[in-house]
Amino acid sequence: MKSRYFFIVLLGASLLISGTGCKKLVDVPPPVTELTGNNVFINNATAIAVLTGIYNSMSSGNSFAAGGNSISVYAGLSADELLCTANNSTNTLFYTNSLNSRQTNYGGSYQNIYQVNAAIAGLTSSTTLTPAVQQELIGEAKFLRALNYFYITNAIGDAPLALTNDYTITDKLARAPQAQVYQQIIADLTDAQKLLSKNYLMADVQTAYPATIASQERVRPNYYAATALLARVYLYTKDYQDAITQSSAIISNTSYYSLASLNNAFLKASLGNPEAIWQLQPTYYYTPDGNFFVLTAPPTLSGVWLSNNLLNTFEPGDQRKVNWISSYTGGGQTYYFPYKYKVYTGTSSSPEYSMVLRLGEQYLIRAEAEAQLGQTGPAATDLNVIRTRAGLPNTTANTQNTLLGAILHERQVELFTEWGHRWLDLKRTGNVNAVMGSPGNVCQQKGGTWSPNWALWPIPQSDILLDPALIQNPGY
Image (cartoon, rainbow, N blue to C red; front, side, top):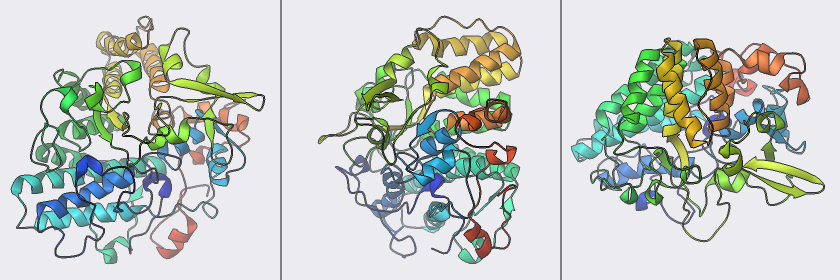
């Protein structure tokens, strides 16, 4: 493709590849691999397969969504969550906060933005699709574009904002201010809310799953998935009242959503997990995160494990440390690893799906937004919902500042190794320099030298040479 600005750590390689695992996403046909043909958007099946191909690729473990090349791993290494061996040069660069624009090869990334833009164009211009299918798929595509840009802008800051698949335009794009990128993310998500069903839909993107949780697959984004991501975006952009409004729309929908037990929180929805808002169905018999994080031998080339900085953060009695962390002892050392996903191999259908958006985060979004607006009572109540599930007593924080600190801590132990939350939280709350760069700092512990510039990741120099309109982040 002609599109540039390649960031594999965020977006992975081509998103439209056929799955090679045990079964296709919700049993739809194999995905279409070319979006330029006139025949792609003339019937429902091939149009649906375009979006399904993106989900298949995201869940394959070769993208920013899951597995060893994911945002969870690279952001966890950049922050204070993960340790790694010295044998993997890419992991080490992230771990020591020593990324180099010449050494780091990010592979192909804006390619999935290109694919989503092509899908939006093809879907919008089609005159032969069933209108309900056309509407849903455009909503899914806009949701995906928003999701991709959310991680792009949180990684590199100002970002080229490609809203077309016309390479004569995208090849010459300068970086748009982050505020403008967020405006587009919000616009896409509000459009998606208008287009997407509030139900979870089956493979034909027309038939709703039955209302009972045990009958539902939650693998295609719906209205509430767009709402969940929008709540997060409003929190990040300090629009706290709208963050409360959006998260409340999900929390109040108790017929669909409620907190699962700790050991059920990463099962697929149909096995008794009402916490799931949107999941990715594995293309293999296990999730990429389960396969990557669970240690059955000492870490070698690409292995990672949990840092003492994270392990020592848990309060006594926190059941998340019991249920979401496990250990392997070998070679005279004990390695603690994330155990949210417990299935790491197998030959039958996985009981776990990769969790993208879940209710636990929504309680913490609303709690933080309430605290920011001085609503300390409601903020404490929402925080205590998460603490109660973890087997902890109610928070003792009762002022705005103490509550904000308590919520940030709760996010650290609730959302660890999920989608880079810790790294992004440190940056958006202004705590990254204090944690990473103070005396005896985390970066120094990891063998690096901290600079405030390292809060943003670099753009590969090769891409800057191809597009003179791109400007590198400071310090690289």
